[in-house]
Image (tube, rainbow, N blue to C red; front, side):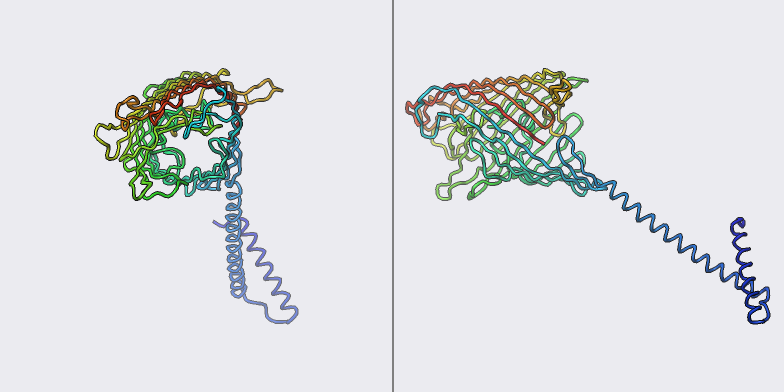
Length: 487
């Protein structure tokens, strides 16, 4: 069917050709073209016009596609700040980079007896002062859709500020519900271990949990980890080696660890968490070639790092292996949380003398929090641990909003004594028993900032490891203020 526009256009062509023919006849006084010749010329012009129309159509399509690509790229590549974290995401969402920064500044005062005697290897006069516990800068994100990465540097430390260490660097492949991670990081080991230190109830983990993670896990551990996560459970396992930044050894440590945890009972505003974790040092690090020393030392600081002294510790035990078992239990109801873990540790001696046994130790803690402003602590189903509460009313005094406030309390025990009164001195391990009561007040002005005020009552019961009568036991109190921003 011929469209009206085509009829009009053809008539215009015929008229134009006729005018040209008439003009040519008038000027040259030649015979006008025959109807067949005129029709041929019109057909040629129509063919040229059709070709020109096709070229214009192709040009318009190409131009539209180019503009579409530009608009897609401009609309997709985004820069945003969510929760204080600057993030860049590519147009197709396959690549991203998020910047991170953490400052945790502790200011502490220790209330101790005056003129405490100095003891070699056990500096008991603790330092009043300040310490940047963590001062971190890093970036994480994803690439090629299924790969995650993280790079994190830390300039803080225990007792003194650090010059900067590689805190974390890893590559992770995600194939739901599985995740495989390789690099230097803290493997998933326990309820307190898995929780972020940015949102924890207290400035430090309980010593019992810290001692467990220190065997085959802990920060900066070089590891290969695989985990799978379901709606109500997590299962993870890892093969671990030395820590990034450790000194050279003749053979590095080889260890294994695993964790199974979940929420078997859960309601609208409540849940019950249970879990189990374990780690094994299959081959301790060899630190001396000639003597064949393979030392393992279980120790920890008294849940505060302004002073870096470790008041309890088993000392270096020449070992062929070690292990720990741990159990987790927690209950949350709206803005109330209570959780605890219990641990059993064992060191297998290397070539022990007759009558010398393999030492076993124990530790546990229970802690809880009550968010006075009504918010609930978040249960993070990526690692099955509790995080800071979501702030319902970020701090704004003009609007009468004061952030989130939380009361917290903890009791922890770490007993590193084994046959401490044995007649055979080689069988004794006088690592000491540490008990700590802690009460704290946490203030979250917004999702980035946190202040916490904590009071610690510490009791150290320890006999002289060398068998003498040196006074290693002591009791003291401490108060600490932490100022934090983390994004």
